[in-house]
Image (cartoon, rainbow, N blue to C red; front, side, top):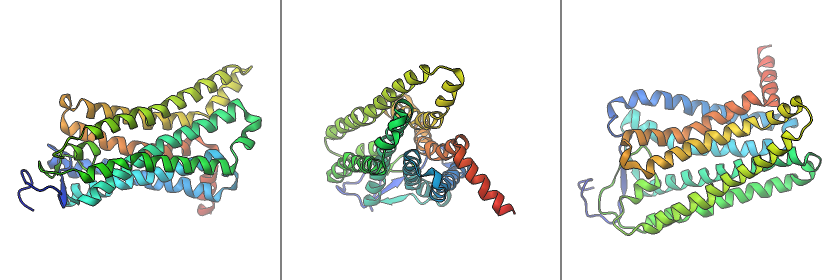
Length: 315
């Protein structure tokens, strides 16, 4: 390819990922915590899937949704970390145009899916606490399957316009992306076209998809808290609220870094580039790393199954 900074191509064959601009000398050191987090995410989420599969007492809506969350986290982390580590360790910066769009799509798609799964888990907690006698009749296995299918279809269809629009634009500025992976905003900035439709659609997804998800989660927990505070004893209130702690931690682990990352991109002129890139990568890794730890520590059935597994191996 010609000079990668100022070419006249209209359709690049590859993009160049810079990694973390300004911190190239520290890439190897930065890779260590990211590699550890990725290893925890892979091991932890596969452990969740294994335990739910092996433990028949965990065949319940909450754990089906937890398995969906684990699969989503595995895809999210694996979509970025291998390429990021290849940049840090081997200086492998090139990525094909089609591979870039595929990565962009998977990141956005599974992020929306994870948001939807958290809403489904909030629904499960709402029914279990506010309508406990009807829980088994409302959240049947077919209903859980329909909710899961709706979450997957919503994520796939809502994000589809991103790569479709991006693949239609000419690119004549540069093929350099100052990041470790192909973010939608970074790719759009390289296009030599009016990309306002992409910006408007991005705001639509932000407010009408993730915004609505946050609203439904808040609405569910408003009703849950009302039901909890109506319980007669403090012990009953604490015990019931304890069943929501894991889910609340997952919500915070997902939405807070995601909101912070969105704000840093929105006001990137006031934020150092290397800091914004670091925050974006941490945002992608925090939920996959923390979710299996949260549910492994907080969920008695999962803890007991793991203890039995290690005890049998030890004997």
